[in-house]
Length: 376
Image (cartoon, rainbow, N blue to C red; front, side, top):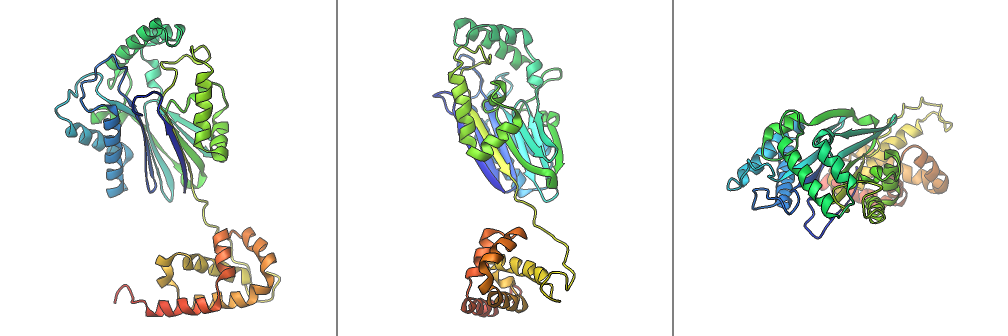
């Protein structure tokens, strides 16, 4: 699994976005503390809240990896609430965060999305978009007034404060929208689902600041994934920042702030191991021996040799095949590199096979025999 990520603050204030990755689990949080003019009832602040929430999420999902994602989120919200009981957790502006959680397993990619961060999942059928947009249905009158005023003007800020006030009144209640804050019940309203792991080509987690790429009309979601895959997450955030600077008054993309915290995470799963059908003896063009099947087995063993923790698992019969392969293939190296690559061998496996020496094989066999059995 390959991971690329980047995050940028949108102001001199601390970044309220958080990325947290551990093993197959990725977490993306976009904190919401509100404008500086409005109190939030918490002495710790939003950056503390999102960092604590991410830590509790990873702790739960690492210690109990089969936990349902919504249950893990509820437990994390409750744990963070217990961590600052002296703050006013009933305050309508208590620190909150949008949430995306993904967990890639052998059989499925599980996901959870709460509030307006965006999850993109590319399969062979195209790009699937998961975003909880219920907040966009709140405070429509205040939103329209804010969007009509020039960004940065006193009128714009006045309408922005009114919009935030209306959103706070609708937060975490029926008919409004749901976000991680102090009430663990909000986790029940998250969007959750699974996609078969074999169908997932890549997926991206974006805060709304990074998702402005789409709002600015810089390209569709597939183009965003291609850009990040080709040039990295930094290129995406650079493009968003350039578009924000070119639209200082919010005419092209009306918004609450000229610059927002922006974070992007791209995950590309490792390709599934090839499992070709065995070649019938005598049909590989090299005689009655099934050399391709033997090479597939040798390939697994050579990759194991490259991983010290697995050396003790090698058996003598396999090492004999490695030794035989070295003798047989030395004179055919150039042609075999192309053929082995076509069969799915990694570059590291090919290099390990073609450069390992017979004395090294003998040494590995000796080390293997000298290594105590795990059960001894």
